[in-house]
Length: 311
Image (tube, rainbow, N blue to C red; front, side):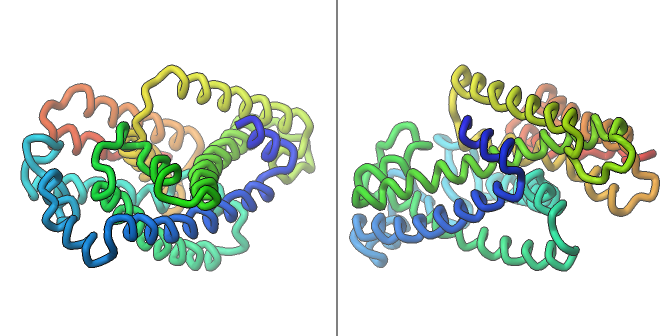
């Protein structure tokens, strides 16, 4: 995190794009290579697919509905389908308007570049998810007792890959985390220097962070957020699976309608967007705290922000 802060604070967002590109190439490439090693350790492609299809310890692990039953979260294929549909809609909104997307839109040459890159990213994401999920499921044939499950790829890097490739896989995981962190830090800097201090920009200043005061405030804010995240990561229990399910609907409910209304509504202004963000966050938290039952709680994760931005 310290190195990331120095890269962004000193070199700026354009250099962070380089770290994102390295992350994409490194992580995508090593995941594909890792999948072949995992499948080879499980006995080959045909053996792995047949074994997973008839895997008694975790039945349905590669079925369309995933694992169901009393020992997992979903009891029937219908519940799993409802969960996947709701989460799919939420993440569809997230992919369109999430911080790691919108921060890149700010630097795009035109809307055509945005659409073109989004289509490529969508295809790459689908292929990457397919390879990653199949590889993670296949690890069960090699070692079904990895604890915690979040450390599966770490175990693979240490036990199934050659030392050099294992190190590259770990670097890919770290690069993915640093890429996300750099995106959020960049948004913190933009928000402080442009949205909060923008009204005080000196006359003639046209770029974000152009004055020394804005730049200093942005760096201090990024440092404070980074230190806060490190503290929370050390104190709170780690659960990557539920963290992703928490983050996706949170962005969808707080950013979704506000982002779309900022394009479609002529009444869009800063106060309306601020209220929309807050309404989306607290609406989601209210659903989670007050609605009982598993399916209702899942629906609460995707509580939409219906606050009309600018009205």
